[in-house]
Amino acid sequence: GAGVSQSPRYKVAKRGQDVALRCDPISGHVSLFWYQQALGQGPEFLTYFQNEAQLDKSGLPSDRFFAERPEGSVSTLKIQRTQQEDSAVYLCASSLVRDGKYYGYTFGSGTRLTVV
Amino acid sequence: GNSVTQMEGPVTLSEEAFLTINCTYTATGYPSLFWYVQYPGEGLQLLLKATKADDKGSNKGFEATYRKETTSFHLEKGSVQVSDSAVYFCALKGASGSARQLTFGSGTQLTVLP
Image 1 (cartoon, chains in turn orange, green):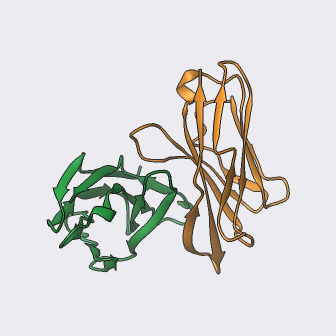
Image 2: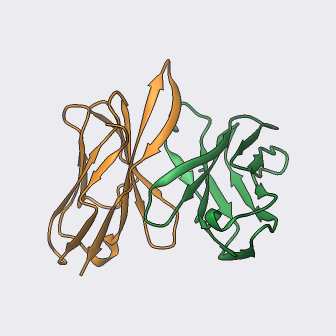
């Protein structure tokens, strides 16, 4: 597609519920990133994929967070047993890589997760 | 590790006023530096970037110069418009080969009044 698509746009979850957030990157973008943006803060890195390989998951805040990209395109960020502190906007970004160089990051509009 | 410190907001200006939003960074080597803008209800959009010392990024009347000696990348615009009201984020991408992700500052809310 023309841009990075994220769904749902909004999600309200009861504490303890599992959620799944979807990211559909720009076709041909091999790199995909997930970020967490708390209210009034800048985005913070969660995890990075190159094709289907998860090369860096150092930013995932706990083992309740899990991300996958099984076919190297669509990615899903799953949060198990959600807690109130998980309330944030979850941003996905994709990037074209050519000859090892990055040619810009395109961000989706995000999923706003509210845990009640 | 890498970090970005950004001028705290909110900033409120009258139309046609001069804008400066300060940004300083900590990183090893020569990172790439970015300014992103987030309009209400929209995703992050790249505003401008600079990839090496003394480079000046510019777009839509905004400018920022990569200053290695002061580790700064301040955003400026000579005459702001109401339509510039948004949140502005300074960010860096580390120089090392493994640093693929962006590190962001906390953002500065700009409101321009007519």
